[in-house]
Image (cartoon, rainbow, N blue to C red; front, side, top):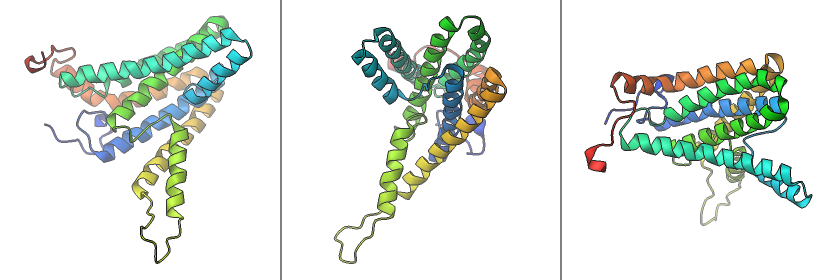
Length: 259
C-alpha cells in the first residue's frame, strides 16, 4: 500500500491513502467551499441549501399552512441532498472495490462540474427565473449532500463540512469541559478534548470565511464566482485522477477476488 503524500501537497489530499493531518486540511478546504456556495447560493436564489434542519422545518410549516406546493418543493430539495450523498457513497464504494487512487477524488470532479453548471444557470435565470431558480436550488442541495457525504466517509464521520449546527454544539461541549473547575477531591477529572475542539473551530472558521468570500463574490461579480471555487476543487482532485488516467484505470473491471 502506498504511503500518504506529504500534507503540503494539496493535489493529493483526496488520495485514497491519507494521513489525519491531510483529512483536516481537506475538510477545512471543503468547509470553505461549502460556506461560499451556501452564502452565494442565498444571494442567487434566496435560500440556504445546506441547512436540511431548516428545510425539513419549512416543509412542516408549509404543510400546516396548507401550502402543499411549497411543501413539495422543500421535499424535493431534501431528496436532492440525499441524492448527492447517495451518489458519493456509490462512487466511493465502486472505486474502492477496484482499488482506485481517485476513489475520494471522483465526487469532487462531479461537484466541480456542477459548480460550472451553476455558473451557467446565472444567465438562464435572467431568461426564465420560474424554471431555473428551482433547478438551481436542487443543484445546490445535491452538491451539498455530495460534498458532506464525501468528507464524512473519508474521516469516518469525524469531520463534516456543511453541518455547522453539530460542529458548534460540539464546540460548546468541549468549551464547557475546558472551563469546568475540577475540585481537588474530584474522583474523576473533567478534561476537554483539545484536538476535537481545534478541529471543529477550524472547520467553523473556514465555513465562515468561505461564506464571506462567497457572499462578497456573488454580490460583486455574480455567478462567475463559481469558477474559482471549481478550480479550487480541481486542485484537490487532479493528483489521484491523473494517476488513474495515466495508469489506464478510469473504469477498470472488478478484481477477481471480489467477484
